[in-house]
Image (cartoon, rainbow, N blue to C red; front, side, top):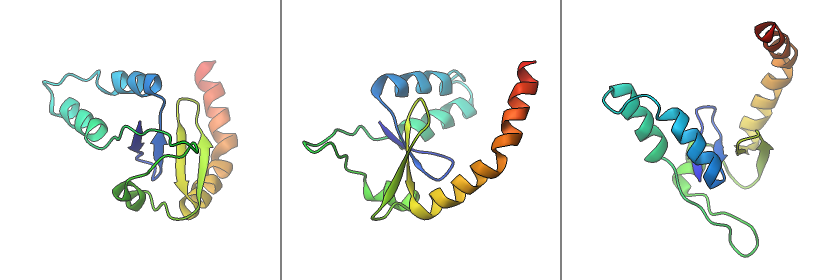
Length: 113
């Protein structure tokens, strides 16, 4: 499954990981507006994709536009999914990741202590 990320990339999930993520996001009841909007944001904007014979996927133009994905992309692993980044956005994000990495590790250690 391919879905836009709020971080400005596209997220590519194996079916089981997408289902697990969807279960977490849809835990909010459908009787609440926030729950309905989370479902719409996930399901209405997600695409079921298949690999072609060469192991490629077709990214719909609307998703390429939304994530600023052009000719070259960066695939970044995130555990539960792969992220598909346009080069310029990836450079911005990777700079932020490097800048914040030590502080985020320290905050993680403090929250588990």
